Image (cartoon, rainbow, N blue to C red):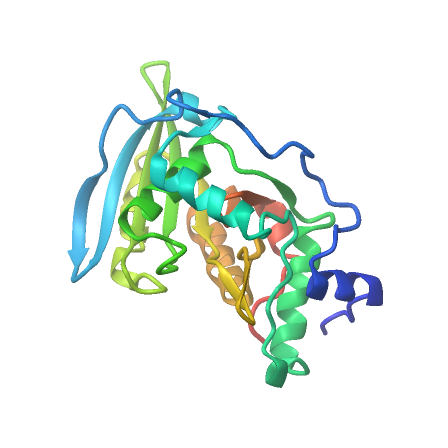
Length: 262
């Protein structure tokens, strides 16, 4: 049974106030730098109309870098979000008025509460997640045409050197088709000794009655169902949800606390 949200937390979710117990840095403005770039280009391995699945071999050092890409389109996205006053660490979840009392939203808001308390870590974007967001934004400007992408991040040590392999599925529709999810490729790589380190996806800009609001970096109930299946099938270690400025990290051990569909 879904636990009822505390009144203070429920109000914060709806109004976007600072959260209680949020684990996050107070300095989100990491500098843009050319050190957050890739030495290789992604390779298209499957195409479905305007959606693609790409494989991207990245420098493992990008994992730990705090700098963000100097990509002009990505920097413009950030500046426009700031100019609109929407650069909030805890953006309010937009709930349609006619759906406010539906059980569906109670479960969604419970997941937001978990992400911002003790089942997730909210932080400013770092190089790797910002680079993948910028990759999608370069193809489809997120302020003009919001779209979600899925990125599977795998790690492996080869000849003593750490390597990253990333599969990114996306298109020009809000949600990418399942044909570009890349899980068949993940399955083969896991069988070949790769570790499924992270499933990253984004939540898009929201419209709050004409006011811009960032997507909420917390898993939806449908996300939870998918992520739990990836943990069971491939040993996924972490789930990340980003909005291009902030990212939540959720360990596999905590994912069982989140609510999926009833």
